[in-house]
Length: 561
Image (cartoon, rainbow, N blue to C red; front, side, top):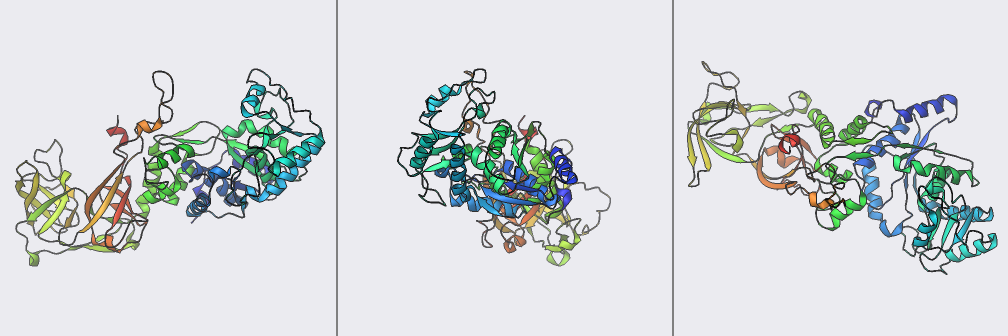
């Protein structure tokens, strides 16, 4: 459920919008989220989704979902479906759904009008020649030898481009602006190129496709977008955006505003590089729980509320937005602390035998599913003669301050009795395989008389524990900026060199019986261990599968210094 407190507090875009509404410039704002369907959405897109849809929600405006599908060889319906699912899962609903390809006929008509107005021409320079003519940041470009073609010749050539008369890459349509412009984007930019590629929506109707800057500006204008929000790398494109809408016959003139993109440390947010991870088999797919994709984070157990909280915390500004992974994990952890019921799991078991166990003298207690949410109810914690406890809750030679089980020491079983370790059974290699303990039947719900027992450990009855597969996920990379590491020669190293070989471990574990009754994507805190979720694809009642979402506290910095 959305509420207005979930979005970034006052920032410069909100100030602009409030001034525009107060002045009467707009009666209602309209934004858009315009992804290219060439991959799955990632954490950076989640920030943009929360901004665009969130502003529309805050100011009672509208937000469209528009697919920028002008690069057909990289786009597919699979990505379209995934993007729509991600936006809805995050809690948002679009006003209208559009595709840039919806406007191909109109874009072509606008291009013809620009030719008739003497503002566009067909060029025969190839890509390398065009780079030579473009100039540099300090040196002006020079006009193409084809720049002064007549209007009639340009109209004829552009129509023949459309009908497929010329080979791919042999001609382009360029705007006639200024080859000496200080902004290189204004040096006669290409707005159409020849590309014989089957389009996922228009099929083989078109062999020419419009470029992003031309398409984006006109799409915004056609949809009556008031505030077109882009990341800062598009700031230098804004003069071209304005030029396009100023030089076509259209009433609405939207304005582009830029904000800093999100850089998440220990991760990457390049679709091309994420695709490389998938195609080279470094991960198990776009929705691998180690991926920073929305679908991957969802499968790992991140929640829409947690991601919206994260987006609020990183904020909106023009300054560099470099965020440590711990900030994201903290937001997820904070949301799950209130929302996730509790369960006991033992991931690395040692068996405990209660040598004096007497079924008639013991009783099982009810335990709350959440210590602060009584409405979540309770479940029974059954006791039996043999138990599982965590291996790291026992130490033959305990360190100073140890408050768990030791030979001759006592601990309380969570929600149950105090036990004392009387004998340690080891195998031939010295590994502890069994602890023989004595239960104090007079300690259920009260302190033992005459002695202090500080430690409390979790446990499971072996008669009732359920076998489960648990996947322990950690950060995918071992360095903060895996795609920005240079070698001794100054060249960037392959980001896959820094993959964390321990980013996923699958173990057999024991969990409470309630684990057999859950639905996929059920979030639980494994007490003392972390937050986990039932896998949305692999979980079954017969064989529960849990993914670790996040640990109870951030241990990464301490263990990777």
